[in-house]
Image (cartoon, rainbow, N blue to C red; front, top):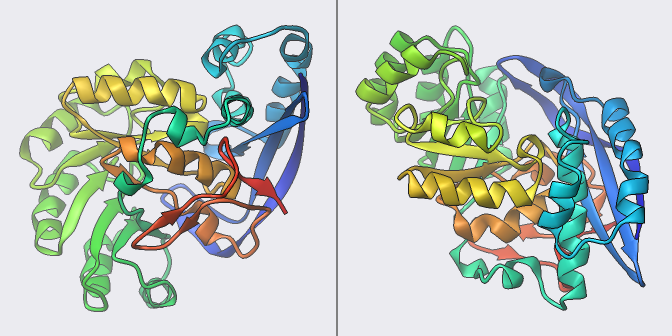
Length: 336
């Protein structure tokens, strides 16, 4: 088994702004596993909010080369456990390795990943298309540029309701809103009443991740379901979200890959919570990986590659009505 990795830039079509950061280019790290004529690709993006840089991701991957190349493993989950301690402070790096492991493993089985998991692509929920914070005029322009039945609207300004009221004038699409921890409990509860009238489906992470008392109030009094994002990073967070959120949004890069995500989905469902998987502006490598497990989900946010002005890979093709997978086995994404 040979492990290699490299850094790429992902240029965005538009400046992407959320409550705590803006960017025009997204750095990403691609991992490649090779063995007996097969290869697998994985991906993780960098994120300054979580302190994840291309440098520390690559350094962490460098530190496990001898372990990955010098040992045998029978499944991706076995490799994940083998490297658990090495990646304890960097699940982003572990995600890239885990995706590559699932890719090469299911290729060796002669199956697509969703086939190996016993899933049907016909059961994939429609992804939302994300509209980042901008002037209202530019947010409207972005919606007109990509007409979609379901938009996620990034909020966290001092005029959030004004934004949604104005955007609603220009489309009948369903909205999801993501405040990225920007609101108080009082704001979230009050806003939920108006947002319900504006055909908003749910509110994602309205409060800071540590505001547990506030979330108890929001969970009790909100007119809309609330979905955890920053409050649900790794497996141990799932149970903590029960009774505070109606569902969780799992990010593969933050959780450490598909291996823990599958366990998180199972646990959340056992606790009666809805499940979503979101993206971190990955290329088609990471997005295609998400699509393979999407039949397990109630909601999905896998529009990352659609936000790029230039993709570095080809993989899943997403339209409002259909998800078309690459022809090959495994995850199936390829670099271009």
